[in-house]
Image (tube, rainbow, N blue to C red):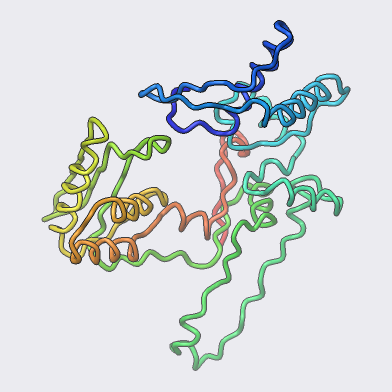
Length: 306
């Protein structure tokens, strides 16, 4: 395997290979060997512990192939690497399938089906907007009314279904970005299976000009060097505030803080960066519900609705 940390599916493949060889040889071996990563690390797989589960998977595949009806259509995170992705998406759009709601779990879909809800259109009719609270005219500038914000429901499937049905962007509440310092756009690249970060990039404005900094690591031994250079660059910026497109960068800061010994002032500085950081993707996902690109009619874009 090319990655350093094999998972259960890799071990099941070893067991499947052992079962296939046993049909030809008549002997089922007790163990198999996985060769992992650039260092060719060896991992022993106990075939006997996985035989029952592997046979269950084989039986399920066999039953699916012999069945007269195709298996249920489910769009998931593996679609991006599947050759049949366009076909499945077209079928889901044609059927108005609940699988278009990628954040909906299988358990939640089963609950909807039990209620007789099997399409996006049916689910969208269940959305009921929250009633806005009335405020007195003299309470316009009161701190109590000013602090009131619209309730944001995470993964509101009914509102997402409505966005898909009407091809509209729905924004819950009034999104706000609080920039209390100099915004620093941070981008980090790494190899999760090796737990290794090989690139950090910074972009910010200084004196009316855009400044870009990038720090590269050629190997595992260079990770600490690029982290120290990046940290020095951040500490040299007065009142820096991290802005990122995702939570990956915040996790990077936490890992570097735990992985390498730092001075007390540096630890306090990193804690402040994490606390004041702004995740633009999280902000949009929390308060914005967007119809996916492949769900829009040709030649038309979604209409914002607040």
